[in-house]
Length: 627
Image (cartoon, rainbow, N blue to C red; front, side, top):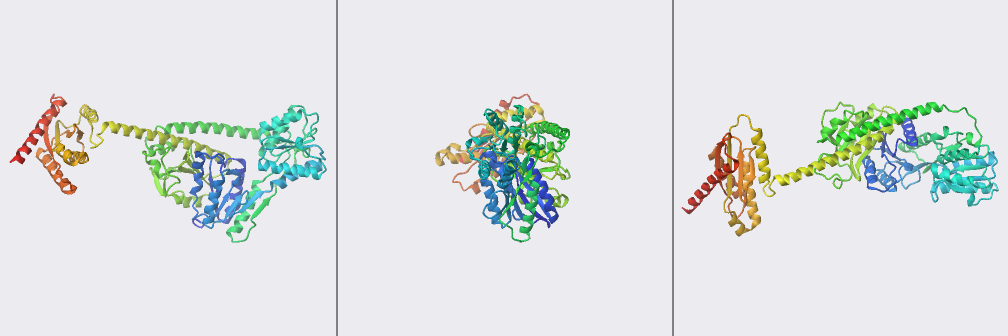
């Protein structure tokens, strides 16, 4: 519960499908009066194929916060991956949350399902008993499919009970699709005698069978009766309209809401609730001569949706392409605000802002403890990414619950099996075109953000490679090549008000002795210490380079106090030697040469002069040690 609102989590992929959309709209209508809020967790596919992409999409169900959720509903028909369903049920049971499955019974749940067998029985009985058919034929789905086999058995049982002998010649297979059903019907047409009725296992095949018969001069229903099953929208516009048996998802939603209310009130409910489909009598069996529907209105609506889809698809493609050119996450977020995205928030995993993570093999499962709001289309939030707890869904989620009475929809973003984040849609109406756009937007953002991460990681690798060629691997100072490029850039650009340049040459004392006595690892330590001294004792914008084996060189555009610089070097080495605990002392001889930037002295000559002063300092140290 959140802010006095009971939270119902519906797990239902492919929300733009007509059945899913009808169920969501109806369920929200029935439960909202009981102070319940519907959160829909969805994916753009039905998770049929066990692929890395499927695992990434399925991560959206991990977003459910069971600590604030009061009930879970699983639309099993839309989730083809059994392991996803089982994981959701296990988590709901572990939190003692009521769980309703729309489909088969699972342990620890109650289920509501259509009594497909009874509904199909109504269809077959109508054809045989009302129309007196003695030579029926069954257009089955796929061989071995549970739904197809169940309906075949019903067909054969009813035929036998009516004294009709049955054999395999009475069964064809249309695989639940139009083209196979058409081919199977063409084989039927080659027979010397046609059946009196073709009873199909679903509506898509019934439409295909009807069209094929009519194209070959067979009248429906005068010569052959055709029936379907499911009650899809298309049967209203076929000619003739198809007799079918409708599985009403509005009725399913009403039953679900009744079960949910009883469970939340602590009342007992049956483990299984069966909903009988409704027989729809129409023209393809000769039972109805209703006035034709206005197909023009329907075609106009479909046409408008199609052109809107094409327009938005072009916009999404442009958006994806432009995001690839962005250098930072904030830049990409600002770009998205210029597009026609509305009633949505986009959230990214925190690791998405790290350019060093390999977008293909790097990253972690789940969303982590905190996430970042990447886009908020109401545009009242301040610029920049907003960090918040993943368990809260959104920064202002409680406010959204109070201000919206439509379903709040969450859909995951992913790159193969790696979750990237999620989108939250909070449309102010129930138009199915918005549900289509939600899936369209998620697909586009998936491509855009995945491509953006790939490009950014590519730039990161290029920078790393450039650093390898620009910097010395041991000391992280410039190497000669990197130094020369930066030196030329600085001298070409110039610095206003600066007309002096100071060159500092430092040479490590006694490196060979350290290597010979203590090993090269200790020699490397001495070199890194000298490099640290160069960085710390010179001003911040000094160019520092490992010029040779144990020679460090620095160029500062300006003047320096020579005595102070040398004193700083001596102090640094003194403190480092005192704290390192090494059995040797690290020190360096330093030469400092200053000249006018306007002097026509080439760089090699400057180095020689600084080098000469450094050797003078080294000789001076040897003289002091000998005395």
